[in-house]
Image (cartoon, rainbow, N blue to C red; front, side, top):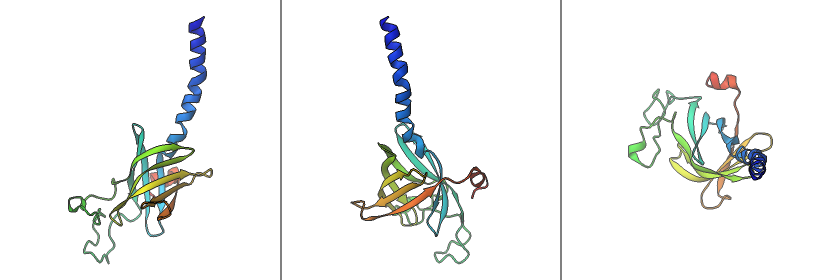
Amino acid sequence: MIRRSLLCTVLLLLPATQAGAEPADEVLGTWLMDTGRHRAHIDVSREGDQYEGRISWLEEPRYPANDRRGMPGKIKVDRDNPDRALRDRPLVGLTILEGVTYDGDGRWSGTIYAPDQGRTYKGKLHLTEDGVLKVRGYIGITLLGRTMDWTRPSEAEISQGQ
């Protein structure tokens, strides 16, 4: 009788436990980052209880012919990184979200790397009801930062690399 009662309790709690874990994973998958100057896909994955995001596609993966820094036509790299040893890393495949943890209520926090600036910022992510991921990078306090809206690209855009 006690076993049956315990089993029923576990089975009743199981959906609640799974439901509690699901919101944290809503950030998983591919996101379109469009800054107005750059368009990229960011693939967010989970490693243990933390999330990370890597650039998986760039609309313009090579430097333009008029590149002022002497790299026309070459694959874009992390050339603004303050660590000289890391400046040759291709941007495609580069991790830009690290140490991201779920804070509850559709919110995450961690760090965000901005390769076009060579800087790492504290970061807050918030998933809105309409499915937009608000990504805010900031220094010190959240008032000193910038927010970008990331959206889900369609399956066709992902498969075509758009």
